[in-house]
Image 1 (cartoon, rainbow, N blue to C red):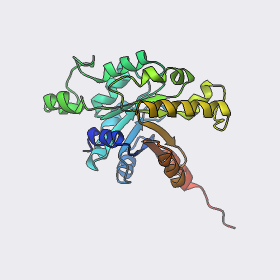
Image 2: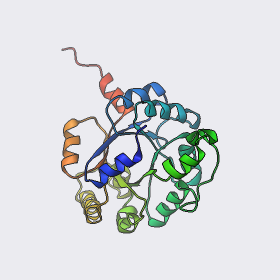
Image 3: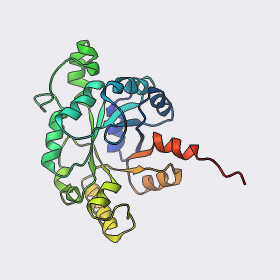
Image 4: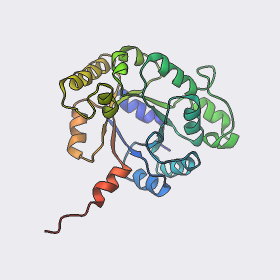
Length: 252
């Protein structure tokens, strides 16, 4: 299975790590995405239709190909974080992080004592106790942690947010961020561009990898984002790949 250390080392070296999102609750989809060449796949538990009991099979399909299984939890609280981790997620994307205190609390739910407050128990992630010590003192400690910056409050608090020593990257959610500014999807608006420039400047100042989402499959946009310095990049979504490719072509 892919190791979070490989992606972390790539990010720290200033290189780009490209993954994708999965919203469709089917292990066949996970298998196809895992064979498509990505570093990681994030199961979308915030906007997708994936239930808790389906997670293990999705993660297994990713692991078989050596792709890092990640999850974007619905909320960065103890219940949602533990659900994804115990099913086998090796990285988490934490939505709507707006303050250092909120991020610190979320990281506390991810890490076992003494570093955090994660509940200790047998689960699929440690093969129901068979790999308990190895998981607790290995994979769990190496968990990849990404905070979504998707509210203007997060932009204003960014300096303190990225000060958390366990944070590996930030990932901008442009739709929610623009919505919090009453500029939903108006990505060319000067105020939105100013907010993005601020995020970029702060991340560069502190050598914090910055992420973005190329929602519509566009190789040129992906290359532009990498050239602009984005490092943790999600390319497309399974549902969008299907929708775009399934469009009936014009016959005349």
